[in-house]
Length: 347
Image 1 (cartoon, rainbow, N blue to C red):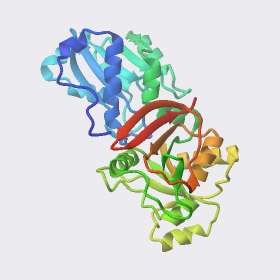
Image 2: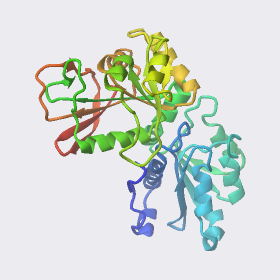
Image 3: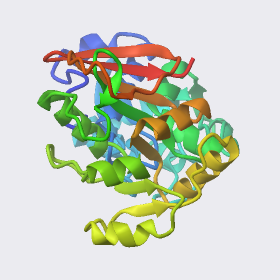
Image 4: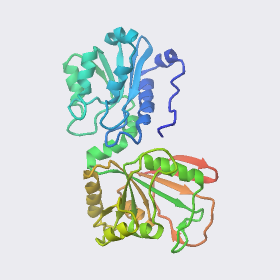
């Protein structure tokens, strides 16, 4: 979603600035989305600085390893507005960091700026860090307000929440099905979704760190699992298999860049969780699982999924390979030239 405008920055800023803390935090959530696909395993974070009912600085975390949202927002303040910092309020969708990593602590940057008031959306989901920055800032005489819009802010950085609390990737399940509930004809690759849905799927791929398919899907379809239809990075491709000899078959198929995840044992929660934790240990914070239906159903049955994106085509197949089934709550629905995309989350 890197090229989508989430918030009209050209609208009357003074009108926006006269609203409540909630409005500014919502603005921060909108800003945070610009970092999607670029910041993982860090969270998406947005930040705005307000003085005299006017936004004098705003930005977001732009890429992993780069400055955090607070630093970018401070850098965006024009020279003529810097004298306003000592009477301004800084709004952040996530509690600011208070540790050295690839960048310095944002709490220190806030202190150095002279900003006297911090409003944050949600606490750091890392149990070892949650609330520590708030305590530090308060001990330094900074007024801290929050959490504000906590549920929405946690949802905006949900992959980071999952990463920190259960040490596994955020799992997105994706499949396309016919109107009568089949993903393909028996034993053959079947085109289900239209080109507009295909482009959307490739955008989704550009926003994740890794993409996985099961062994049967790989050797039946030989998918590329790339973002060739849109600009953006290619995710790390993974094949789930319990056959060590498949590595040679991957090489023979010209897929030497694919990783092979061994010990994928269907239906055993502990093994699937261990598989996910192994993947997370290698770096990917967001995993897109594209099939096949048996692999996806295993994640569903094991309750190890965070989001499902189901493309339903108006096409009828009448017979074939049945689509996965799940129970969840519909969080969004998109219509694309006949296709219907349902975004589903666990109940």
